[in-house]
Length: 172
Image (cartoon, rainbow, N blue to C red; front, side):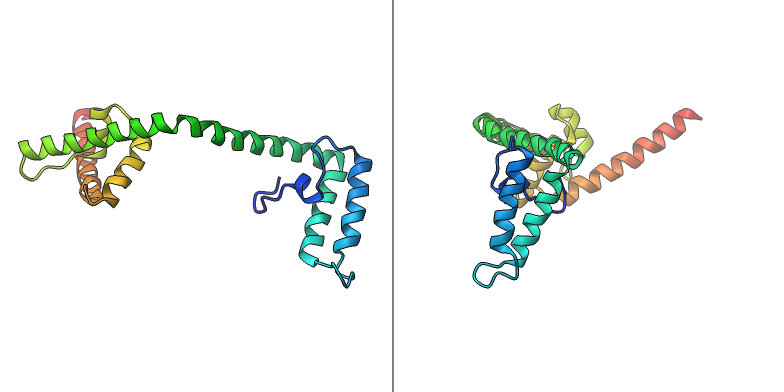
């Protein structure tokens, strides 16, 4: 399936994924005649090109087999999104818990040290979640202006440099 164009060729030709080659050819001819640019009443060059592209792919058995694999994967991904919608409530509640935990950690750290921040690495360790899972939480808290991301990143960079220096000293 072409990545730059997310056209569903079966939808373009208005046929089923199980359509036989004869059906695809008949439907193509009907649509091509209707949307051909030379047709004064219903001609549409962009639509005609899309129909031709779909037919070119689906009429060649090898191209169709490759397309079907990508098409099926895309279909499964769409259903995965739909079924994940049922779990949103639990995900939302979990996100709230993570946000409150991050804020509580920052609050406690600030109470203990006047000019304190927490590096992303330390935040990962304290919460027990990988950075990738914390990205949305930190983005949300930054957008709400409850946390400044720059301080977290600066603190992380400084912490990383210190750890590298310590590791270099330990190896010598």
